[in-house]
Amino acid sequence: MTTRSNPIKAVHPARHPTPALQLRVGVLLTACVWFLTTQTAWAASAEKGKEAYVKNGCWQCHGFVGQGGSAGLRLAPNPKPLAYISAFVRNSSGPMPPYTQKILSDNDLADIHAYLESLPPAPEPKTIPALN
Ligand code: HEC
Image (cartoon, rainbow, N blue to C red; front, side):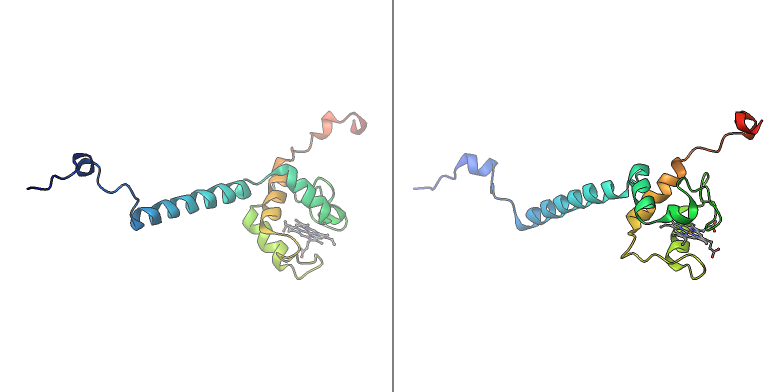
């Protein structure tokens, strides 16, 4: 008597995912979660940046729209690149206090840069009636 193999099993062998497949699915899911969480954090927001700019007191020396004043330099419009601003804010040893990551996160700083970038150029003096 011969033993006949199950024809269905022959066509569809093991239905259970192999450990290698489980690992690959796990890595893929982790990558998706990582991507989604970091992508939202990366998208610098001018709106959040305005909040961080006000909350951290940048306005006290640089003015509410980064226009500068007696206490701080002009920061906007046309702000310097984020890398420059970041290096300055973290390492200032002059009249401006340095801000560590504990006080001001990299995300907040990127948002502040986005806020400064969002500010429109100043109007031409000849378009301001009080000056003419
Ligand atoms: C106590 C006043 C004060 C506060 C608060 C302050 N700054 Fe400043 N900031 C200054 C002064 C003064 C300078 C010029 C310092 C120097 O040349 O060493 C400066 C310079 C800078 C520069 C370099 C500008 C350039 O063109 O070289 C950047 C960028 C800057 N500040 C960003 C910020 C940000 C962002 C904040 C808030 C997180 C902030 N500052 C808060 C006073 C301040």
